[in-house]
Image 1 (tube, helix red, strand yellow):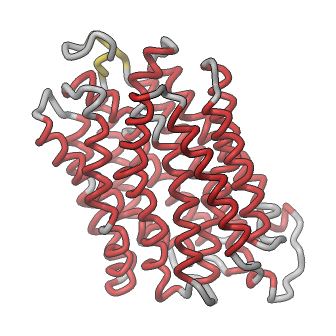
Image 2 (image 1 turned 90 degrees about the vertical axis):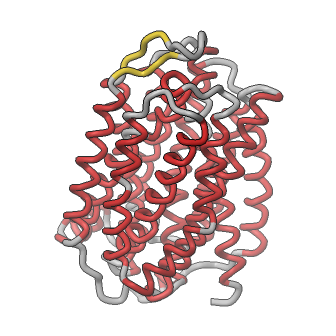
Length: 403
């Protein structure tokens, strides 16, 4: 299609706000746990609420997402996400914030699936990993700019400020979507009959390939998201970071991967998605174990480990996402990607809750306000187990015709 670069830019910008909105909660954990007097379980609920509602709405959206023009749904989902994010900006209490996070997640989860579906519809498979690498570079941009800037706003003003910034930015991006994204109806042009909900579920769960794909998503998420929500708290309470130094983790990690993500996409298109996924899916085990077993460590050494974790994690996400966009036909892709998002978000919530149930707190030798985490090393071994299982499942995925 014409103006592919403009489309990818707008989609990447929308994905940036969605990812930053989700990621900013984790480095704010020391502050929020102190302000609202939260333990690990209550904070994990704050994180999980976003992913759980995203999972529920993702499941419900699967029955409608392929019936309508992609642009119309994109505008609707992004509008709801914007309202939820602005509600976070004015939240006066833990309960209000919990509701606002749930609202943002309800729309944000569908938004992510919709963006991946649009890229997959517009970009042919032989160039798709490169295109997804560009869009998924927004993860890195959220790290290198979004999170450090959000933490700066939180330190200079209050924890509300990052969400206000995101809400205002989202309003601008919504206007760009309305003005510059054309109608997206290629998935409707085949004259396929509208399916009933049970037909949609039967079409997806009745295929071995898509069942394996959803299992792959779940296992890969467990191999990643069990450790991520508590990295910031662990670095402050156990490793010896100050709250101000947390921004360096996301700055360094994001800087290393912001250009790395498009390169991984090109390598996946050139050398094969499974091969690149296997390489990075194996390498990521090293920094997972190093982070979750890290003793008090100099800042520079901890940042090297965190940077390696960001690179290898991103390296497995680009090819794995591309692999999943290719296992189902275009007319059913939106439904599948929405269900995939639902599984991913619900599993993320389950992973965060599981980790929060295993972890306990004790007094930190570095900070009177922060708590040291106990049993985080066990969470690391759980992440390694699921990461290894994902390497095995990936080999069972096959490409669908017309994908």
